[in-house]
Amino acid sequence: MTTQIVRNGITIDDTFAEAFGMSATGLIITADSAKWARQCAVTMTGFGTSVIGCGAECGIDRELSPDETPDGRPGFRVLMFGFSPDALIPQVMNRVGQCVLTSPGSACFAGVEAPMRIGLGATLRRFGDGHQTARRSGGKRYWRIPVMDGEFVCEHDTGCTTEAVGGGNLLICGRDRPGVLAATELAVEAIAKVADVITPFPGGIVRSGSKVGSKYDGMFASANEAFGPTLKGAVRSELTADIASVLEIVIDGLTAKAVADGMRAGLAAVIAEGGRHGATRVSAGNYGGKLGPHHYHLKDLI
Amino acid sequence: MAGIVLTLKTQPDERLDFSGLTPAMVALGTTNELSAHVVGTTRHALRLADLFDVRSGGADGDITVATKGAVIDGIGSGMTGGRLVIDGDAGDRVGAGMKGGLIEVRGRAGSHLGAGMSGGLIHVAGDCGDSAGGLIAGKRFGMTGGTIVIDGSAAARTAEKMRRGTIIVRGATGAMAGVRMLGGTIVAEGGVGPDAGRLMRRGTILASRLIAGADIPATFADCGVHDLVILRIMARNWTRELGPLAPRFTPHVVRRYAGDLATIGKGELLLPA
Picture 1: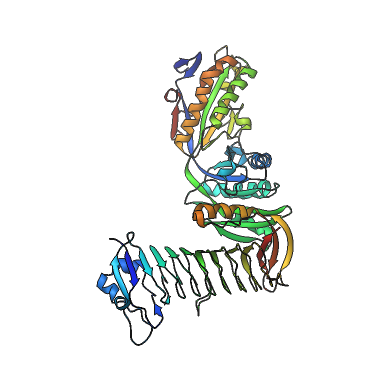
Picture 2: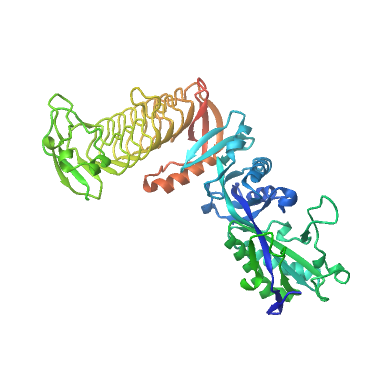
């Protein structure tokens, strides 16, 4: 058991989240209404929780007002994280091709500016089967691809950064499942206000925190029994007797600072309001510090 | 170093040619070299100082030319940067082949305004002649980049074989605007004349109306009324880049005519819905 700090009745473990360098890209998705821009963004970021099984970690960074989008319509900025730029290329093509191109009234633009580029319209233009046209405006190139409700306008490419960080995390522990969920939701809402970060799991929350490896061949990750409350009497547990539920928030960001800011915001929310819902403790997941180069010590984020 | 002001002191009895007299040349040369620059177009080989009072003035690096009725061709042709102000009317080929910088014409401009230009901005307060943004003889393409804003009207063959860039005409364009166009955009706020877009392959002509006597060419297909997202994008970018010079006619719901179907037909003539 690690040493602890207590703030507002919440125990903060003296431990750290261990995060990894990643590649990331971003898109701005617009539509005729915020409802359909959101629908499109939600669909294209679906099944994007973990690079282990999904190929990319995806999420909505934030909603954009019409003043902030290239076409003056409501929009959302989504971020995608992968092991490498090459790993992101098929993810971008498939997700934009199947979820954005198909969505009523949508348009798609670069959401990250960086010298390294990943094709958007550069590839998807072929859907136009020769009827697509290019248009240069404002120093950028856009493709106009005919679709059944008019034109799908798609920027030629988007930026890709290799300075991103994935795997920042918080483990929120408490007395019961509903209370821990409520406290964790508050933390996710706080993190959502931080720029350049996403929380890629369902609703920003993961309940199946994992350890590396397994007793079974071919499993890269398996149950983290040290944080499994139903096992706490049977295994070498990290949990005290009063803890009956643990939820994790995984945070990916375009920069190391963005991840730190996200963790800081989430931690502050749990400290401020979590106790009211039954949260009692915050910890973080790591691998002993030997795998990931980014270490976020909780005591530095309070 | 201040800018240079050239004021006509003797009315010439021949056309003058200011080709090569750019802000870059002025920055590199001495006043004596500038004064000795040949601007005459006859065997008399008139030099700049023979006709103009050359003095320092204006903002750093600027050239101001007070034309006072002289017919001066090629002002700012080949310009790569800086600012050139023409205080009065200009002759032909203003900014032809221009690559960058800003040219302000406070009067009218002649033919081939910005012909073959690839970058920069030209603003003309009055009307201009034929082939604005069009072809320089012997070249493959017309304008390939940059922006021309004409507060008055443009004569015939505006943007002939234009490939990229934007031409904004507050008035109307004459006959055959966008003829053989390969890309880029013409905004005709006062309307387009006859045969607009003849043989265009790609590009956009956005016009407020067809002026009297003009019609949609028979080789353009009516594709109906559409809310085009690309027009919203272009309008926002124009506002950001051009400020008060941006087009005032920027609808996004338009009737789209695709053409010229006598070629590949990937261009368009857009008119109000």
